[in-house]
Image (tube, rainbow, N blue to C red; front, side, top):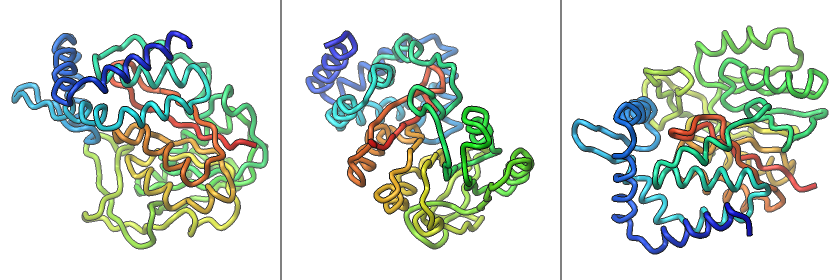
Amino acid sequence: MNKIDKLFNEFVDKINSMTKEEIYLNIKKSFDKVPIETQKSIATFFGKFNYWGKIDLENNDYEALYEKATTLKENINQFKWLYNILKDYKSKKLLYGILNNWFCYDFNTVNSCLGTPYKHYFDLDIISNCQDEVVVDLGAYTGDTILDYIDTYGEDSYKKIYCYDITDEVFTYLKNNLSKYQNIIYRKKAISDKIGNLYLETNPFSISANKVSENGDILLESTTLDEDIKEKVSMIKMDIEGNEKNALLGSINHIKNDKPKLLISVYHNNNHLWELPKLINEINPNYNYYLRCYGNCIYPTEIVLFAIPII
């Protein structure tokens, strides 16, 4: 047992020994020790991206902290399951760091896991090479992920790339940025767990945070990946602002039959950190799992789950 194994097991035991209220009070006490400017920054960030609950310092509303306490108390054994299936030390240390950040605003452990020479999503220690890939980019945005993919693995590494996004303004940038590359297919559709319609929910602070909703003003075509792509796919990246779980449910046949490499954002919902690997494992148990973080240590976001097929 190494140091992180010991710390994680002690953390699990501590959470199991506490009530939800005790966990919340510990989180609140730790938050109060954070410099006030950092507290304000966290509160502002949570207000812009409505994923984790709110913090309203003026009105003593700490919903987000209570949500963290609830997630830890109700799911600590799920997090232990995830820890035990992660395949490398860095992933395990990162998971411990994220949970300890939630619990006592530990910035140092996450910070020690952030340094990487690799592009977002394309860690060469996890995916060392690519050849003849059929890539699906859900949440393609301006094409930044595909440009990173090509920069990492080369123009000759893929047969076809499918780019999905739901925002009209983005498509101009997306097509322009990828215009010199061959075999890029653009689709303005919401990928979810059903065929029909959803709506666009715009974020006033960032177009990159636009997401799908059950109701709204801008109608979107919704489909499943299993329905929309009939050929075999070998890599699926998802960063779709909290709709990742539904998109995975709509990709069951591809995951079962094709065993694509999966690069999934797992930070838009507290429970996605364990729920999404659990779901993938239930669909197809023949995967290895890794975690990486491309955000910052104050509040870790841009957390990517790598599910890599066992050959």
